[in-house]
Image (cartoon, rainbow, N blue to C red; front, side, top):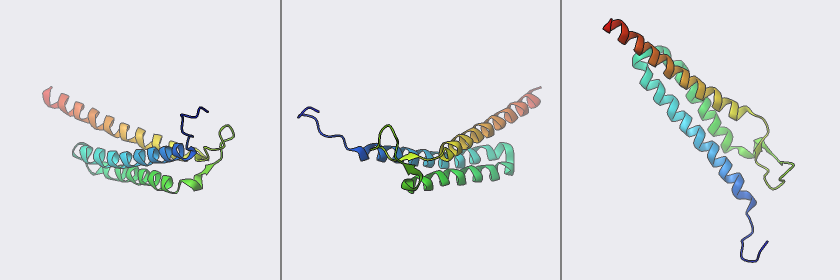
Length: 121
């Protein structure tokens, strides 16, 4: 290393990764509640349970990232970066919640389209 550069702090990558997962989880909580509220007028109370389940799973993502060291181990290629998730549960839950929110919005949009065609036709 040149004398003009500062030594890299190995803890910063871990911190940024943990913060990114927390932000993702919080965004999913807000997204689940917002989608539930917006689709309630179209789909009725049937959207309440899936929206609450999505919000609960998103809150779980946040809670897991707050306990991050429990789900981390040393990476063989970069030993200083020891906050890699052990399993794929958190990314899998993020994908499931995101896809369920997208499907809920798609169902709501299709129902609104069908209702508009029936009224106009």
